[in-house]
Structure formats: structure tokens, C-alpha cells
Length: 196
Image (cartoon, rainbow, N blue to C red; front, side):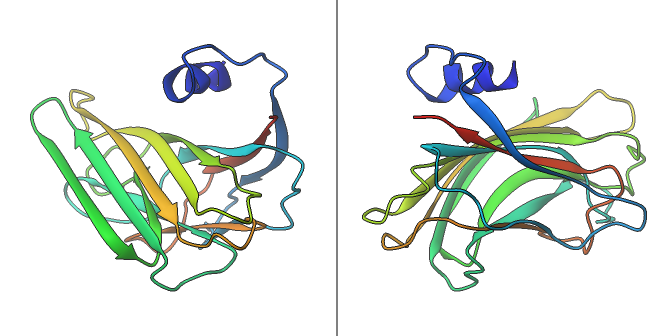
């Protein structure tokens, strides 16, 4: 069902068939947490990729949340750009970075210090034309989280970004916490291939 919703939001407005998505791999974080979630040796047999994530990090601060740093092929240079718009029912914010060493997936990980320790944030991210060797790769993501203990204020974010590497297909993906040091137990990230 998530796949159909995403296709409706981000594609032509027509829901994809239920067999258009194939599971490639799923990572579930165990006891003690995990500093990075990685997918390697990604097959080149799909048109696009999709990451479906639910989780949080160990980032502890009184308000707000963490985010994920999304990188491809172990590239940590400033070869990425990112854009975002976010709202929480009371305010709206937007921003962009033209030269970054990662793509943000904002609101991916709920902080623990505000008492929402049982809440998990969710994120759905599409990676378009990941096998192309003649154009830069683009990313679009929709994510949300609960901001406070009373479950009275949530936040939703829409992000986009690009990896400026037109010559190489994406063969690996890495997700690390933006502010925290670990993804906490039961965080789960699944990678899907989208058929063309």
C-alpha cells in the first residue's frame, strides 16, 4: 500500500501495480544500536529505488528531531545538493544547500529526550534513475514524526536532492544519523527496486 501511495504522490498520479516493487534488502537494528545502515551490491535490474524507513536515533535534545545523512557509493565529498520544506501545524520552514556532502532526509529519527521514547518517525524516499551513467541522480522524500509527549504536535517534511555524479550508477547506499551517533534498536530500513 505504501508503494501505491508514493506512486500517486510522486509519479503520474496513477497508482503502481502491487507487483511493481520488489524487496531487495531490509535492515533491522538490534540491541545496542547501529552507527550506519548500509546497502551494498545493489542490483542494476530496476528503474528506480525506494527506501522505506521507520526509526529513531539516540540524539538527545529538548525539542525537534534528528535526520539521516544519505550518501551513495561511499562518496563523502561535496557532490550533493538538498532542498526541504517542513511544517508542524504552527510554523513552516524551508531551505536549501547547493554544495553538501550528503542529502538530508529530515525528521527521520525521533529524539529521545522529549519523552516520545516509544515513537518512531517514518520516511519514504525515491531514488530516480539510479543506474544512469549519463545524468545526475535525483532523490525525493516524504517523512514525518511526533514532536512532543502529548502527541499533539507532529511534523511533516518534503525533501529533494541530487547527487552530482553522472558517470556512475548507484551501487551502494549509506544512512547515518545527522546529529546522533546510533540508530536505536528496532529501527528498520527496507530497500525496494521499482520496475520500469
